[in-house]
Amino acid sequence: MDYEKISSKVPGSGVQGFDQSVEAARERVHIGDGVCRALVVHWLVAKARGEDYWTSSGKVTEPLLAASTRLSKAVRLQEEYERVAQSRLVLDPATEQALSEGGLGFVIRDTTASAQWGFATEKPNDEPEKIVHAAFDAHSRAFILSIKGTSGGHSLGVYRHSREVHLFDPNIGEFVAKSEAGLRALLLAIAAAYREHRMNLHDSYILWSFAG
Image (tube, rainbow, N blue to C red):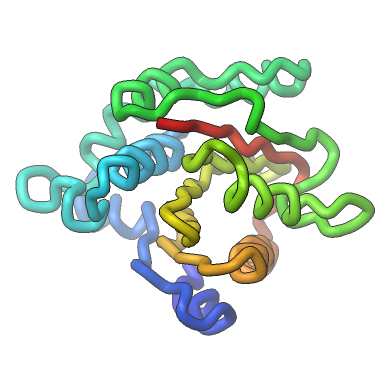
């Protein structure tokens, strides 16, 4: 979904196109709620281990979505959303356990959220700036950007390596930003893509943070 379009909007940002629904059809795998979170978890673990997700994610011995589909059955995102709505920043236990096993521990002090504004809202509060600042400057280096709107919920992965930040959307693909301006442009381009597809994921967000 719009990988080439976003890559052209932010030159030099494209790493790998990916669409979980297309991949699921190719592999004949049924995907339900939570698979985007599971894909992001496995992507973050691969990054933390210094592996290339696109060559180390089991394409030879196991299809890309197989392990993520299994993890998705344990993920309880609706319960996580309900806790957040009650101002309780309690991460989904299956997500936390899988990341912990991959060497990434939850860091609540670096976690930021907005219950009133979406991840790409620039006024009256500059939410992209908060996300960009955390991604480049926080102690944590791995993040799950959980976004929500009337179309449901979705998860994106963010990982900092040196002074580059990688961004993975399971509906679009992986991108890299070499500057804060580049990451901001990617966030806004992804938000625009969802609006063009009439998907509202812009009502609230949480940037869950992890370090290892």
